[in-house]
Length: 401
Image (cartoon, rainbow, N blue to C red; front, top):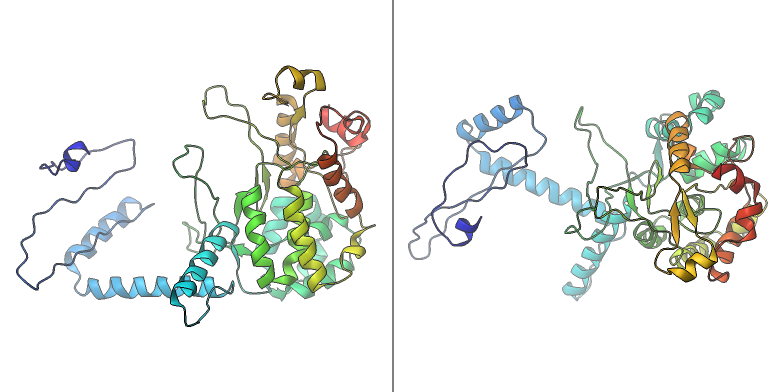
């Protein structure tokens, strides 16, 4: 790299093992007046040996590659425009700069929060796959319900069927389901803990993948704008928000299509760090509540007494008040035993294994009002050393064992 930067002659390396390659192109070009030189850099990833050989053969022997390459670029550009357009990212005014800025804003927004695959259409295969990853027992209990679904159906039709069910977990997971795609985690790529991937296509068979993943505030921040384009999915966004928050009113680190994650203590990793957040809870939830009240007046009231809500089990313990005074920068303890128990349950049951359970190990269900109160109380009880709620709540006692 140093040689390349100094514009000195570099030597080709043909045998680099154990690390992804970095490619530097060096060439001397002589241009006559009013002439130009064009070139293309061809690269691909996740290729096996036969695919690499085939690509090399294609480059060396096939004619018309430039035209084929440009057609592929044009096709990709049109697909990207369609994604942005589906989130209301296209506007045409007399100010092209503002139009371009709006396009880029919507593009960056959907790259974090995702965009819905086919408006309000849902594919049975992906929906059932999501339920299976979330809770195997729910799938077993509702085999007839799932069997009778059409191969594709509208979100409104699914909601009507769910409301006829007596299974609170099926209702919860069904409303939570959001057929999003083109989403990736947001963050500074220079930080070693940030890994980014937009899962759009299976590397095995090329089939479509619907997926989303994001840090808590980034995901819900971007869904605020998306909800204005797809207001019928606002209930799912609210359910996902509330059901990924903890019984003491805080939120985990990252939310995904298949659940949520939390940071762990890694003794050998200098970047290892745990965090428990509540600073973004109120404003994002408030925006969602304003949107649902605007598009569906009265819908919130219908949730008040419905036990369709749950608590996330994040293995963090807020330290007692005297320890907070001793070191205000070290306020959370990581419960390794609790973490192991959660992961074991999640492995057996699915993503719902990371939810708070009651004494009989069943998922602990609450109504909408309790979830809202838990969030409000976390804001009003400051500092939050150790409330009676943590000591006396039956779900908390059982879970911490």
